[in-house]
Length: 501
Image (cartoon, rainbow, N blue to C red):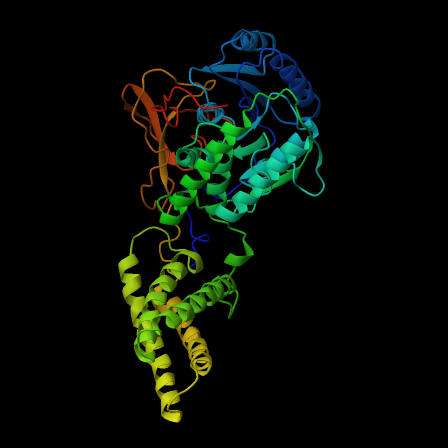
């Protein structure tokens, strides 16, 4: 059952209008901690580059997370000298916390960040954000591990980076090439829905955001970069690696249990060729066949191992029934999640019950084959039994796939086309970063059901604030120009004393 073609919370991507006066199109965030020496040269260099090469309005936001040196004073001085520079101070440490807070409150439709050392060559900035402006992609990352990237760094950091990438690929099935390059961008509508799911507040923030986005089916654009290592980096490698491994375990566990509501981040593809109505080609059939074959192959090996174990202390019929029962439960669970994309625990009991019916059919085929073999030979060899069981299982596998697809996990698209609504506080002024009294966190998107027509958007009062209700992804006047939103921090209760840098 394909889930990526059904409309989700996010609207279809659109190209941002070129004549966008007032609100910046791009907000580049620079998270800093005790960077009094590097902050000034970094901001001046970035501002000069954007002024010369970037064709849209932009903003540079300095996100100081609990610096103890003169970094806040340097940030304020830069804000006073350069109109496009804004500064914001957070009283708790954590790069992820700083990015989440500033991104959540920004009014720019494209949000980016880069490290203060500017190890990444700035010529990659426009290629980074262009796919997001055009509506082609949802997130974009700079990659130091792409074939055409040019990287200068020591052997130790090279080894650590590639090892970390292998860990992500092996444990979380990540397909992006570089999670920790400090050079990323995201569309604001995606950030508003994705960031509340990201728990990490430190260096694992990037990885967690990318893994969740990839699992939700969002499009991630990779840009090869020219990158020169900063020998004066203050990152503690051992502490950071330990925290990252803890994050990998936590995210992997959440994905395995289906506890993350990734369907909220689903986006209607619109022009996806897989969604076109093509005669005699069922949607998702090729992908489901591949997944079913992989799961079936592993299940067959698991079944044969169990049969051989049970055969040591029982007859062939009992061993076959027990092995097939255990492997059938595992097979149904694996196909439910991996082949047909069903997440969460809803309907799991019913699916297992239907899977047992399918198991009964497979048991009848395999048991009948064993009975026929025993009738033909009074004492068949163990290898002959296995060969007969493999042939019977192949026949049962074809029937199992057809029953799974048509009966157990049917493709139901009858819920498509629903639109969602979101309630936000509309304030057509500069972005406000609220860090005062903590307030209960509210989900930024609240589905309200289908709306057959475009209603007017009358404001109403709520807690003394004028609030406007409109559909997700739609500004108050239907454009990006006046789409400024005043948002509360995504996790205002995040007040841990600090994260290891």
